[in-house]
Image: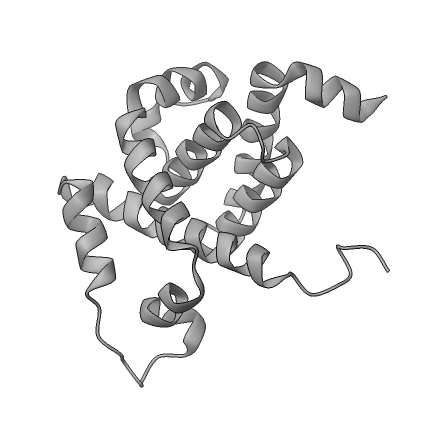
Length: 166
């Protein structure tokens, strides 16, 4: 049985939860203009809401998330925003301002991981971006995210992509 057919490990679940939180935090940061430290503090200070299902309840997501990764992703995507946007922008078919804010957050997160977290295989970065877009983005947003992250991987990790395709 391949890893794709098995349930994700606890570590994989923790990383995915961290990325979910990071996307939501980056969206909030983008929409409100609040400092990322304030956004993170709001996430960390949430109270239980029994009316929500676990996957909708950010407190439940926080319980399984790799909080160190959440912190790194949230703060570093904000820190490197100009660099990340410069790497994404030439690949787009529209202005960055015209992107759906959730898809923009996912693309920035993916661009950060492709450029700064080289220990994460490019295929994992793309897959995680697609899954996040399926969960939080517009109906076909995952296709757009997939296309942009694939182009970005070819640009930023050409040796890894070439080696994989051989």
